[in-house]
Amino acid sequence: MDNYFCLNKGTSIKSNLDSKPILNGIKILRRDLDKKFTLKETIDNQIRLVKDNVLSEEEYRMVVVSTDIIEVRASDDLGFIYGLLFISSYFLDIKPFWFWMDQGGIKQTEKIEVPVKSYFSLKKAVKYRGWFINDEVLIDYVTKQNDSDEFWEMTFEALLRCDRIL
Image 1 (tube, rainbow, N blue to C red):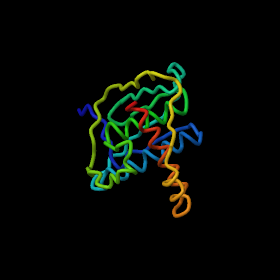
Image 2 (image 1 turned 120 degrees about the horizontal axis):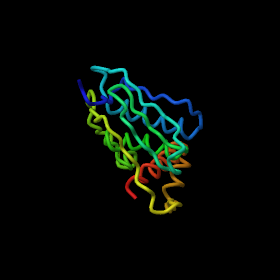
Image 3 (image 1 turned 60 degrees about the vertical axis):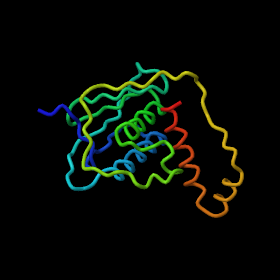
């Protein structure tokens, strides 16, 4: 019997939580799964989001329950988002600044084996973290020439992804 959960294009993400930030985190991970995996073979399995009030704010626990189920557990929206982005970064190898560095050459594969075990987030060193975006020329260009919504979505996604490396 295999002791791995196989991330692949057939992996679905299930949640009873309907907050806009969590739904956006699910959308980001789904996009990353679609970029990483080919359609050659799909295995139907699930990533489930489970509320866990034992965890502190912004913390997550990813539990590979079986070969069919991964649970991302958290007590708040940011915990779920960080957990979903952990999967994207750690297993799919999507870089925090993928959009800005044109990480178009994402190496595709059929599946990635995730060992059946638990993964825990690290405790944050400081409570409030953020960025100051000091690039008036870029911001001015993007707002005049292009869709500024995409620019800001990618900016905030990078901020959330970098939380793992700070």
